[in-house]
Image (cartoon, rainbow, N blue to C red):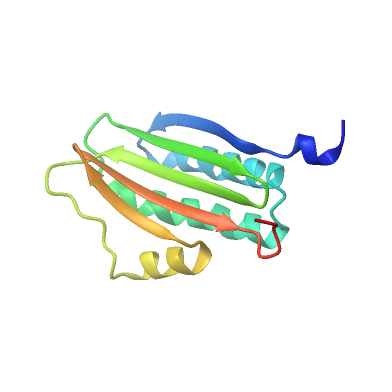
Length: 133
């Protein structure tokens, strides 16, 4: 089997953990392992780990009691898309003016927030600069 046929192309990995800071490391480790599978650089992998951490830090204060933190990873050669979401307390809004949001935007692009049916989702993409499109 040649290397090109082993590259990820639209594979999806989903993880659900309790919405508690002690489980964020599970998502960081998963993101790093999947980013390596997508052939991101070591620097890109570290940026992605930090971006996942920042996204979770922005979401967790708004999680409703006993909710879960859900992560969805979409793999492709040279890029990894991540969506992290929680069931939120009513009226919750992610702070898009603070330092954490600024850091998140510097680590991955694009970054977006979506509010939908009681959920808050932060979506981000990390791409390797030289990855063929």
